[in-house]
Amino acid sequence: MKNNDFNGNHDCNSDCNCILEQSPSKIILFGEHAVVDGYPAISMAIDLKTHGTIKKLESKKIKVNLEDLNEEIEINIETEEEIRNFLSLDINTIDKNVKYVVCAIKNTLNYLNENTNPDVNINDLIVPFELTLHSETPVSCGLGSSASAVLTTIKLVSKLLGSELLVRLLPSEDFTSLSNLEMAEIAYSVEKEIQGRASITDTYTVSMGGILEITNNEYDPNNLNNKFVEFIKTCNFLIVYVEERSRKTAELVQEVGNNSKKDEIFSKIGEIILKLKTCNDKVEFGNLMVQNHNLLKELNISTEKIDQVIELGSKYGLGAKLTGAGGGGCAIILLDDDSLHKKELIDNLKKISVKGIFECKMYLES
Image (cartoon, rainbow, N blue to C red; front, side):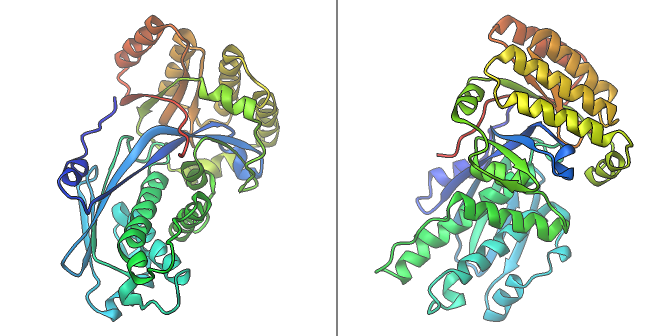
């Protein structure tokens, strides 16, 4: 069930200087793990969002408040030396819970600094602010919560500096908002800086919106035809947070990489994706989901409880599969149009004590 009680929204209601932004989360519909070896994956932005607010402060600080994690951090930017130290910050010195957001602030400021009129002084570019985030999705379960938080941060910081500072400094020029592609590149730089090696899948999916095909860590907007995209828009899904993950993504990727059958399985997943791209029937779509899941089971990344959810999703919906790295986490179920089936499905999911149930559709950036 979604939790939309975001204190930041209430703060903004009485503050005309407060800016609100939001970003989607994501699922991998097909192709997880295979994408690591250069095979295609189909990812989709979903309308479970990270919400954020930002407002200028009088004190010479940057404040970050992550409501879901009950984490706060303050960064002093009173002097030019403190500003430059922040812009060159070793992100590994920051606590892991706030690391992604702090790195997103740093990388956005550096990007704007490098792409702003060279006559603008660094002290004028950076203004003190308070940034608050809240997510509708649980963290660390394969739904791209980190990428969503990073993108929301990039939107907020760039919008604050653009609306409150750059236009004032350069009245003869129009500040051009960052494009979705620019924000995707900044978001990817954050994940790469923190993780060392990163896929574009999460950051590009939440930044571009809609449904994407990722191959060899590259994104081509022309890979999916409009008829298929329009078909996906008509689909309704349940995201089921089944259980906490028992293994880290890196461990699962290594285990799959050592599986002697991986090339054969990845090739079959690739064939499923080829069929998917011409699919316009929900029953067929559901069957392809189950086929993909069964191949992931052969890679030993599913769990007994996830398999229970897949069985329920196939019985009361049109099909289901795990989404993400596996070892726990989430499953996705394609719903039919019968509201009674959905009620029976949700009732049975609750009986096996899943951690969360979220109804969603594809999210499109406006």
